[in-house]
Length: 438
Image (cartoon, rainbow, N blue to C red; front, side, top):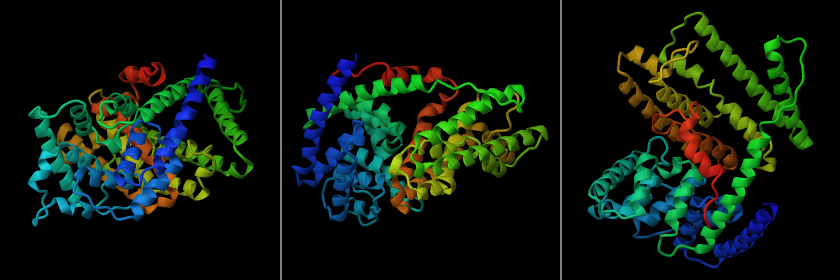
């Protein structure tokens, strides 16, 4: 097995060199954009971060005109995903004097799909992109209903209508794209071979990591109640292990994780007090507290401790107080409460945001779901905005966006896969057990 893994790594290294040459052998902007897009969707962008950054920086600096809606929208999406500002005015050439999209656009499925995915990177107060979403969604749905699309485009449209590309769980999307990319005209077999190799290599790495994280050190804390001894000793060991594994000049990072854990413990105590006092919070009160208890800040801080120079002290400061983190936490809370509502509360649970909204506004659960879904959309705009407002902290911002994407994945179709792992059985097998056929 070890020999096989080493062979795969050697093959991957050769293919990586071939791919790197692709970045510099073409001056064609569209070809370079398609290369970056394919690399990202095939799940190998982590292998070419410098090349992608340099390519997109060049593309952003230079003017680009095209009669292709697909190309204009692709450029818009790629740049905004990487925190490079592009005005929605780039779509004006596809509109009439009344600022509405021209009829010809409605007959361009690839252009519509590209526009639809790009427009979901909107920020607050961008009604033109809201209109782009509505327009493209309407015509894409009509094409699906009219059976005018062929595979694999029809599959991509159906997935996007369910969850737009900027919000998809990337590694799961990659499994779909492996099959689809090979059917695209002009696809690059080197990219596809490298992507499959890298997927299988990472799958082995992830499987080893999953086995490793189950190991704990035993200890005893005599002053604690019996039921807390093991928990607290393991918790302290965790932080000690963090400190032992980072460089001397990075040990300050562990203090941020400790601080967030302390905050989280305090928030849990507040919830317990509400329950003990039979407190009936307003919707806003419930949102204010219950969006702190999922631990979004703790997750983002803890997972950044060992990231080396990628995360600066300014990034840790930002992570503990940013609006983007709060937006992510709200998405986490609202999606959890929507998914768990029909299951009902467990004994000891305080009222959910769904229940509070229903009680306060005297509406049905479906009306509450609709309102929370609108709030979720608003929070996505806040996170998208952070990509541009804090471009110098892009790795930290992307960590928050990726956490929100994982939440969309876990609570997809109003199912609570976070609590009931049976919903994830097949995708877990695909990600961690079944190698991709070469």
